[in-house]
Length: 329
Image (tube, rainbow, N blue to C red; front, side):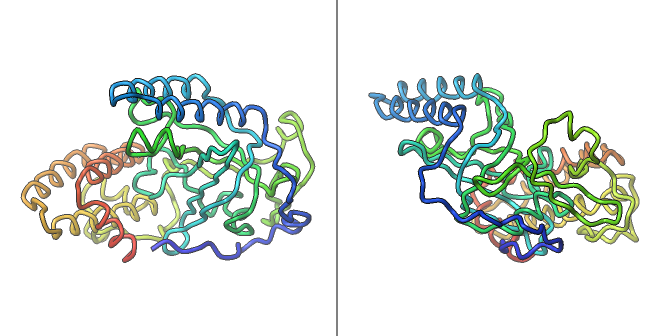
């Protein structure tokens, strides 16, 4: 179950002042228009293909063009179509959509923590973006900054999440890592953490050289091993942990949550009609042996959980189990 974000613990005073949605035509940046034009041409060329061979060639050419375009997203404009969290609000997912000249494109984070282990696109509570999003709602027009990510399949160029060629060219949804978001028409925000722990919002536009002395507000990498007592426990009893890998999972709240998800997904997949429990058990045991080779290397453990997630996603029962598991956690 995905819960809507509530009000943030920290109120960013004045963030929404003057952010009423304008009825005037939106002013899209030139590079955003160029990217949309490229994708619209791909859509027309794909539709004009006389057979599947021609369409697939167009699809491949489109991916090459997208890869060549690959630039940072800076001040692009769109509408928030989804702000969601997991149960408990440990992370937020975000989708921003834009329509230019009758061609819609979406920009999204990865949807689940397990699939996001290697990319860290999901927005966590220790990020200033989490607090900014807490004051926004679906339907808000925003300006946003982000980075395109490479597709897991190197031949696909930048990451577009559609499962079919047609979906990729007709209604693409690009996986990105958001770095900034603000109400459309407002100045770029700089969020500064004060010595007393409060957060101040500076609405003045600044250059990189002017902000170089400011403390970083970027969230720490997930590869950092948490030294604080974790807020989550894994699927096994940490009091009985024996291996270095198990101790590392117990000491890292992100890995602990992902371990619970993995165990529940495995259990669900085994119980689903049409599944092959023996094959699943064999695969799971082989994966656990692989995971143990990581010892206490958190980065290696994250990658291991990501690999088993990809294997789960290939199973026909995955979607049904995904709904059941996420709803129970």
